[in-house]
Length: 115
Image 1 (cartoon, helix red, strand yellow):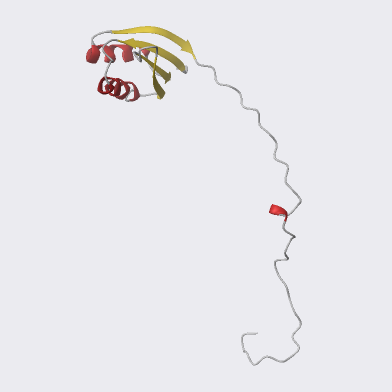
Image 2 (cartoon, rainbow, N blue to C red):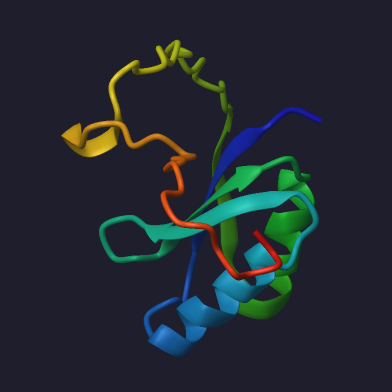
């Protein structure tokens, strides 16, 4: 299936509990990527993903009795420009480079057996 943007107008979504129930129904469908409440009176639900718009509308009709499918648009993915990362030859944060291993000549014989 193709990624789609679906807008459904749902009657009786005037309380926060009703909006929450509508969001649960929309998000519970397989293939939904995002859902949002929109419209002037917050009576529309916008869903993006790969799902059947008729099935979603019917599920909302079962709960709210009146649900109208307003639009179905094919959602085109924007191509992201890949920026090449150039490795920096300078040390990070401007600090001078510190050698990893420093050896000092021993002037006195050590009594330690490990060395």
